[in-house]
Length: 188
Image (cartoon, rainbow, N blue to C red; front, side, top):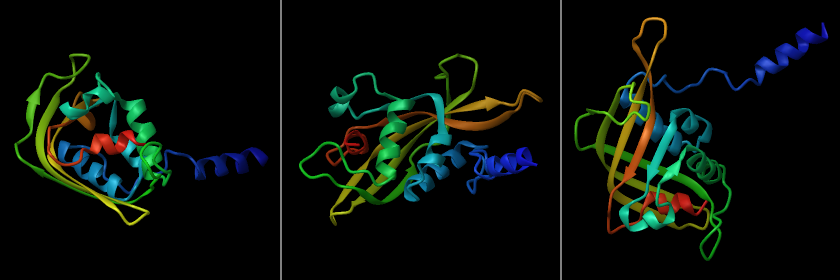
């Protein structure tokens, strides 16, 4: 009897609970879930979007912050702090993110690439014009307006060898005269 109660309580809090986000069965759904997870400040859903070999490449003017880019662990560490309301760790005044507005408008079609780190899965890349507004608890906001390049990788269903789900493999931030998203994330 105790074992049944324990199992029921574990299943009620299990992280495998159904998500309200659609399964990322196309590259476009990955991008839609990316936008939604940031706008809803949902680090858990954001985490589900990243491939194990994910890489965030900073804009050229900020490559010094991470010359080889950020891997998934660094990205998730910053995103969890940023979306959970923790204050920035750098800058003059610690600030907390209270809202993110993200609009990614495609500039190109999805183009198949050969960027899979293992060389066996299919990958696609697309360029976006982005407008990102990050509002902070002190009433200030940061406006980001720059080109972003997203690359997704498809996993294969073992049962029927069909494409099943997509994950974000790479996020490249291009040069701009305005604020960079990578620079904001690095403050967390």
